Image (cartoon, rainbow, N blue to C red):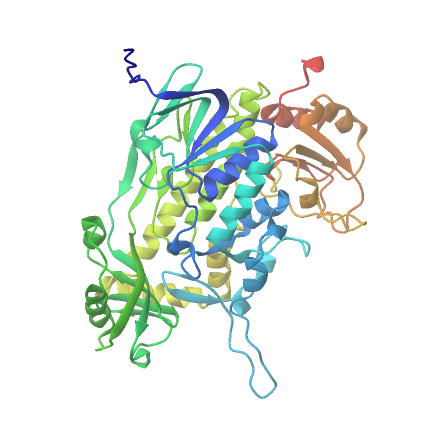
Length: 523
């Protein structure tokens, strides 16, 4: 009789991927799209077998997309594939008549304090053109993931569901990733696996920050007597409650996050007691359909890279969902990291290119965390917070105040501190429209850098040609050129160099060499 002993070694996939991504949420999927667009082989491991979740259904799955995210999706030809934003583009739209004019349209909020579109002076948002994309759209999370997954797979990325990353081991030239009894090899590993990231924990990343002030609740319920609740967002001496649609509740209980951390089930009885205490009414919840909890815990990895392991999205930073900036922050990570990691893999990266991911995105993440903390401070149910709340409310009701808050919430003010004297450097490229109707965003689907030269400067064209297919030279007449003569645009749409007059070719050469590797024939 022959006895066969089953090996204790994990079953190994003998493929060696350029990048293994842990997590098939929007951030992991968008990163996979960017890497695969640059001809990198990508494997995504996702612990959930079914990408659908009740919490992704409307309205739980509704997310506000900010200007940088909308621009990123547009520049990759993905925005038109989303149907939900087309239906919900103007969720606050109101019909009006001469006898009954429409009330002011809410544009968003800071710490529950509403600002209105009519109070925003968009002329203060420099370099935005009539052809620019929207600054805010509503999207459904499930649809966004489906669109990104289809694109990732069409580009050659592989998605394996029901396989959670359990541990990994890295060497100087690669990473071995374990999922139960399965083993996978990659040159790089990126953790996009959420706030409880296994990659972050196993990788020894420090996760520094602040503990929560409240437990937040999102629930779908039936209410027997909804007329007892005030409409809108209501701050009370014991917390906050908000009924966004009939039966959809959001509440904040300033318990220091105790209930959320206890990981207790959210029962009808608990929700009703909480709603009665916060609202000061005897309102009755007759049925509970689904509920989830969250907090304002704000933490950030002190570094986004450890050797061949990187972090993006909630794995790198967590904060409260106030203002809805978490998804946008993570998608910004993916757009920033994708082309830089791809260039590194293809040996086309100038020195320090991948390090700029940490430099640029960590500071943006820190700003968002502080933005979240500031909102929590003025929402607390105490006299000091109420006094500060009243001052902020007065400021938001001014034109300059509403413009500033809206600019921060929408991401219009987002920029990187890059070398360069021109005020456009480090900002998102305006969506220049050529005379034939083509817009610059529509020319960025291939993920290449662009030298946009309105004056057909021969020296610039020759220098751009030294970078082969990494930098595409484009010239032509546009409807509004904003006084600019030439711009160097990174693959993520960020302006690396710009000139208003006869360009300084030496300055251009320094800028293009900072972000792109020259063609081997010119090295």
